[in-house]
Image (cartoon, rainbow, N blue to C red; front, side, top):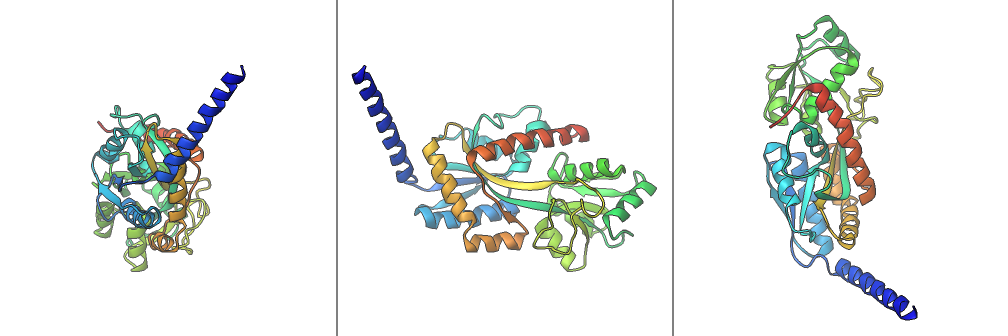
Length: 323
């Protein structure tokens, strides 16, 4: 019996030593950070800012690999099928990842089982903006106009089932109004359509909305988060402006493939948390209207599960789907 106990303790010591060594030795080569969008978008800019800081911290290059297409499912599939060694990571718009679980009838991976959560890194509101020619100045004005003109107000989105589309559909449902959906191929195209007067309303990501609101080309009615955004402190939340309970947040996070070792997950979580809180990274966040946010892998996993359920309901209610 004593021999068995000693053997078990020795084995446990070896495991602990091995885990500690793996954590201390990692990374020993460059890390690939896959992004599901083209260069220049929020996810890409965040990935490059975090990647540059992470490179300084760990002494290895972090290479951003843009693999846009199919609603980020191409990038997700690359990471899901990569070796579980910590050298291929996914800088993902987690909101899109959660939406895709319901939007696509069949994915080449399992949204939960084929990934290892590492940490959230950012959260951001969307901004509800209208063309200046639309006779509304507040959320309540837009709701009143929508009720007086059912099915006559066109709104733009970045495509069927995207967060911009679902935010508008949620707004319509909660406000009890009907607006016409006009999908475009991306958020920048949706904003350009609004600027051109092709549509009257859109929910936009913060950078293009802020730039055009500050220039007087668009009018801001509200932000979608429960709290006001520091980059636009005078713009009310949609909840406080007349639609109580409205809450749509754009989250970004880092995932690895399934079966990533706990030691490497802990190392990556610590390094990304440190990077998110670095002064130069916070400056980039502020310029984008993005809030810094980190959590534990377990908390991140729970967040993913909750978002899949919440946004899945929105997808089904909208009738959107992708093949």
